[in-house]
Length: 639
Figure 1 (cartoon, rainbow, N blue to C red):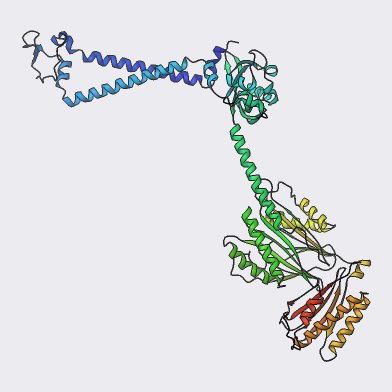
Figure 2: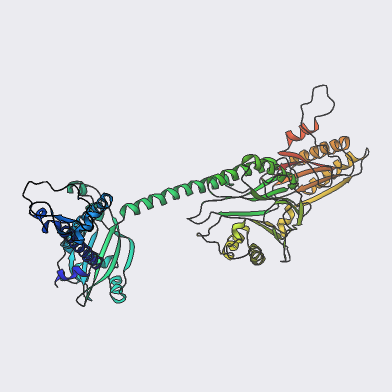
């Protein structure tokens, strides 16, 4: 194939040729105008002596103004020799300003003509370059193929440096194996059929990076591992004399690809650090209450999303009561995770005070504003009391708790009892839901139910349906809820789910969970009656003698303290689980006892100290209806 005739058909060649022809035409017109100007300026010299002046004579600096009837000077005497020619008269009669303007325009015209002539010369020089010279000097890879089997017409030096020399006239499938490996042959066929260029970006060329840097010696390249390069290939259709071909142009984008990879690696490291921080701030192992079975899961957003501020927690409060918390800090990244960690720590500290749920959220609200006034968070704090079979909760702008009753019916908690944390100026309130034996509940964050193309209420309704049919242990229920809601590793938001079950005890398990209560009516017989009741109950539960005696002593001290400092109604409750014995006394006075050091001469003040010494844990709290509860518990010996 004659490659020379392809040069006129390469991209941009026709446009450059048209521009060169236009520039040459403009230069020719400018040159003709300059010649006409020169001939017009020499006309007066052709009429008389001015045109025949001898060498060395100085032309007149300015012409004299002559009237219409004046004659021009004669050739010998200088007298009038006849009427003045109209053109000469007009030229002489122009003022000096007009003559100067004509001179300036003539200079500009001459300069323009010179520039056009220079541009035409440069254009002719560029046009004189061959396609081999043009493509051979560009640093990008360039190859030209023709025909349906893409026979090689030309490859430039850059292409040869990367892939080696190629023999012209050989089909690309045989002579250009690199294009086969890169999958470009189907693309070239498509370019030939459609007549439209196609581009593929960032194709990896194994080992090609070593040939890019000519400053490195061959010995140095051979001493290290080969490096890959990346090229963006553009296939452009070209035509010459009815024969079609393809210009293959490959731009080296290795630096851009490596920079993008470094950026992705940096973002990946930052995300991994945020996820590590997030997971380290979450409970490493959930506390397992005696009366509940709980499980939780946390899944960060997809790889392109920054980690959020979702968290959960389970806190045993004592006397069989359990606090369950779930929340979501607005925003993403390390900052959201750090704020989440502070809020979770504060929740655990406030929970130790055994406050009602709304008071815990009230304290959290003020703390969130102090941590960051621009940061808000939603949260649900719930407390389960097995003696009451209720789930007391307070919600700070969070999604509703969903409860599945023992009969399979599902109910949703009411609207949030307060705004999100960090808004301030709001009094939170508490509410309650029944959670009887056999019932289950799920607490979750918005990532589980919120979708960009659907209302969040639709997501909550979908969760209700999925929760109604999700059976099994809490771990299994968590996994089923995630699958039912379509949560995958590519999900674009954090998800936290906390599932709790209050199992119905039957058979041998039921023998390990017992409750016994006695109303204390006051009077001198209240204390002996309480001791007799406690002794009988503990004996029926077949506790060891040591645990029986400790339980008797604890019940006696708590009852005596309530009779002395409390007010009716008073009640003694004994409760056993599979792991502990709980002794609890309630009365109508809301003054909480404190442990203090009694002096040797004091006759009172030692009851709480005795309880703290013999029991594994003790505490006190105010009851919702007024009054207080004082309790202690003993760990059962391992069987």
